[in-house]
Image (cartoon, rainbow, N blue to C red):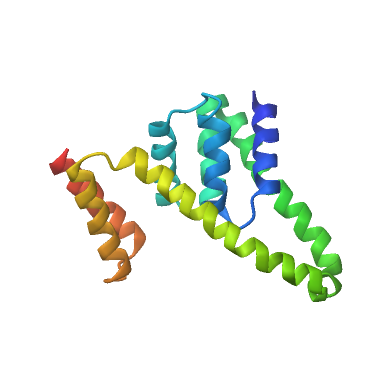
Length: 170
């Protein structure tokens, strides 16, 4: 199972552009779609990944790997998700100036950016749909948006406040 985790996360790392949040739809499809995780387990892993230091994709891979195959699974999943980026950076660094100045490459990146935004919106919608199911959930959702967008509170502080509110609301 650990080697399978490596391959799944290698594929996710290789074909998702735009960072950790853009990987979430791929992770969801691979693990929830195949019955390895429930949406609730996935949401819990995302919450933990968001609260712990480090990129969300790496944290998610580590937690999913650990849940499915223990310590060795977490190591293999983490290596799988970071290996494509590491390999690509090594290759691109060797040819960076020539590579990025190509008009076709610039146009390709201009086309990829909106697609990444679409992936992020899809991930947000999918998580919203499975987690905001009651009026209490809506209140915490709206409250957290207000605290983040208008008051510019730190993400971790908002998570802590919502966790405390959850103790009293649920």
